[in-house]
Image (cartoon, rainbow, N blue to C red):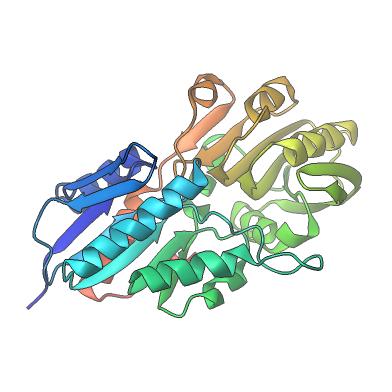
Length: 315
């Protein structure tokens, strides 16, 4: 007999959780996520979850520490309420950018966050477009890695970024595999930006590997944070003679002056998903186009609940 299904969420992205519930055709689970006067997080599950397959939808986005703690405490509450299984659905997996020891005496926070989710009591985890694919191996529980590429490619095709007159640009060497996947599905060419990063969140574009002259170009990345990399890359591409430049990314972190930088840049469009809720300033920016991953995540939840394969959703 199939167990019943419940979906819960914290305060990080309730709109996405509501959209997922609408697709799955169940109401959002009742959970009271508030704070004590000193800032400690208080969670109370408002329904019986004994033996129920529970899915906690919570991106660990701004405020990052609060969002992560809400996720952990909700998982702990469900575990102590005898939930049948607990699946952490983390559309945006924060702390992923420190995925190795790039310098001496630095942490590997991607592994630390994975340990915390596992120790809290999650039986399975799912995330979208990890900053580095090897983070899947940091989890000691089953892990599913989904990609927003189908959603982003549909929008790129709608805007006409398809065919040999389009060039997909990777903003760094580490993103070449992602850019190649986009270029293959769009029938487009490929270019790479060689850059140096003298300090965190500071980039300097050095060279463009590939011919972008007279082409419509699309910069493909997983995260847009301060938009420094993005706007520097866009300026270099236009200086190299490109006809136009756009960008797409899975996660719209948009910290600091990122929205103003994109507004003032040469970018024609910035396509992102709703793994992270947009700020009011980002919502008002005419260049930013948001595509939803609610149906994709909802389909994954359905398949996990029914014990079906979700491998067809990986690409």
